[in-house]
Length: 372
Image (cartoon, rainbow, N blue to C red; front, top):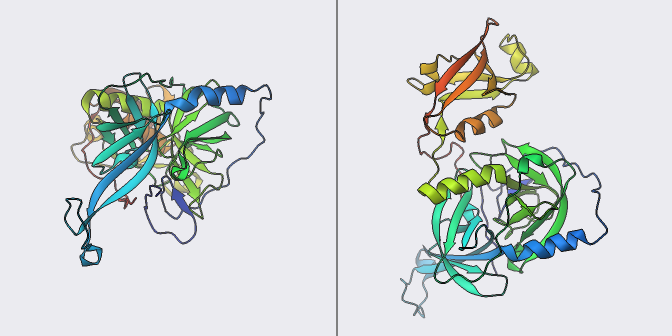
């Protein structure tokens, strides 16, 4: 049974694997404080309550090879230079009608999608919409849908470091499995896994095949979609990443409604201010997001933003990280007006209003190679 693999970069040392990703990355160790583990059976209760809401997703697609793939005994109706490639992942039932949330890379390029439910029954599914930029997809079961147990969405913003979480999925295609860990970190970004990142980091065991599965809190609520791991070996090493539901849910809703995701577009390049940048640019503030460039005729240019400005607030919330700021803009609807608190290089403060455009549907800057 072959695990689904995604390769960003063939790395000799450290790699990110999420049904798997390989990319060299330098990362600080995850916090491994001992979780307060309930001893009254509540972990088992939560596991039993949620496990049936996670499904196995098997996909196949036809790939064409060269003369080396020639099979004189091929009688399956395919070209002799074609073969079927199989992949496995996981998904989360989100409504009783058969809607399933998973990773985009789990169903990317699939000709056939088969979903295996908790009772072993298999149903075909179709893709409702995919968002490769955030690595999320929604699929729908076909035909008569049996009684299902959807998972309730939790508020991922309320997670605290050290909270106990459970990861449910189908590692290596072995079958449904539940692992336990803690929330090691929140808001992980700039990892190069996806174009938009705001990951929950956990030490719950996540392996190839877990992609698209559930990360749940101790109330049995869905708080994340398991997506990737940091690994030297390609397997579990204590650092896993999940897309938080507060990011996944609005994307899911847009995919269901429109079949695509429309993101807000400001038209700036930015950098998180640190001591070195503040000194080099002679900035009057030590925290915020530096505007490094403004695209011509963009919403930012029309609002009066200029290179050298520092953005310190958006819609009344403080801005201290460029990745978080970018996500905030992207998750705003095109046409929405946002209030930006800025500090000019001379030190003058002010607020500008920018009416967002729609982000062009182009490939991410850091192109990645996807495999199975």
